[in-house]
Image (cartoon, rainbow, N blue to C red; front, side):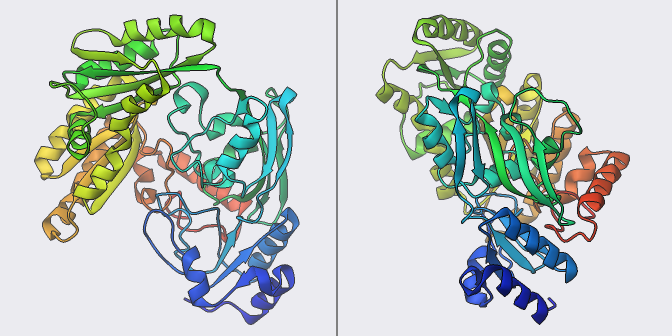
Amino acid sequence: MTPLAPALLRRLGEIFGDQRLLTDPADCLSYGYDNSKRTVPPQAVVFAQTHEEVQALVAACNEFRTVLVTRGRGTNTTGATVPIHGGVVLSLERMNRILRISPGDRLIECEAGTLNGEVQAEAAKHGLFWAPDPTSAGYSTVGGNLACCAGGPRAVKYGTARDNVLGLRAVTGAGVSLKTGCTTTKGVVGYDLTRLLVGSEGTLAVITQATLKLLPQPQARRMLRACYADVSAAAAAVSRIMGQPETPCALELMDGEAVRLAEEYQRTGVPAGTDALLLIEVDGSPESLEAAVAAVSTAASGPGLVELKAAATEAEAEALWACRKVLSPSLRKIAPKKVNEDVAVPVTRIPELIDGLRDLSRRHAIRIVNFGHAGNGNIHVNLLADPEDPAQMRAITACLHDVFRLVLSLEGTLSGEHGVGIEKRDYVGWEIAADTLETMRALKRTLDPLGILNPGKCLPGI
């Protein structure tokens, strides 16, 4: 790895000063990894506090042909913020101000380093919320949520990050300052650069500020758990639920393996004979809630239903959620090596996906556990293996290839909400046609002509 040019380091010192520039390898190390567990230390780390500093940094990296990787808190799971080519890491953790909130316009403006949880807390003061609710909401940044187009359980009703952002400020890889979108929910002037940048994983531009669309908080919620004799019955229920007018605000699926693992880890009262379950949450006004619960309950009922249970209190709701909350700890306990693939298929193809995954599990002798956001067809496929077993580790790679082929054969996509990063970069060409992929590379060359922004991520060949 070529050392950074002394002239570049001097320039960085001029922009950021000694207090906001790290060059000691020991200090830089913690900015070289994310939740993918990959680690490559950067050669320098800088902490921007303004949009103008970001623009000056990008200009310097262009001048010295130096790689620049932008990060928030590093909660992503795909290696998207790992500086695989060294260079400079830009941390936006100090650009964390909420700039304004306009409850009447249902919007909030904030810097990219603001935590999702901080936005939620500020919005809640006015009876509002921002829709994306990833598991990491308490400590992931708005910029990171936008970079990978985060979702979460609420996306089934309220949409993902892409659906809930009105506009951005950003700096392209060429150092050009952009202001995209508008402050209204309708607006069709010019090309939609906002949606282009959301999900681009920092390969096209550095997002510095965002105008987010807020929604009114529902006044009431009701939690239900539906247990089924098999996953086909559960998937059929998902189709019925999503086919009627009362859209739930969460619709989570756990297959039989997931249910058994959770119950082995901690008993949560799942009845005998359950081989799949749905966790369903309905929200709305107190006056409309009972009717919505009745409609969803009717749709959830049908062949294969073992038990349908509704929570009357918050404590009962927590008890029903317990089987889902203990799942991740149980997976970590039994499998030191867990490959979590975030795929999505049309809701009606979920039974074929689960059946196909069971077949792959048998064929490759790899334990596979499936759960996720069924209302979007977004399933987290967990391949469990022992890293000390070479045969299992070889089987994981072959099995993973077959998982991706299966998903694509069902008209699905290789990533629903976690992004691409490094982990899925080499498979993108399986999903996207060559001419379309080349158009995307041309966009990259236009916005980042020297290829300095987060190279080796998101798309193959950039």
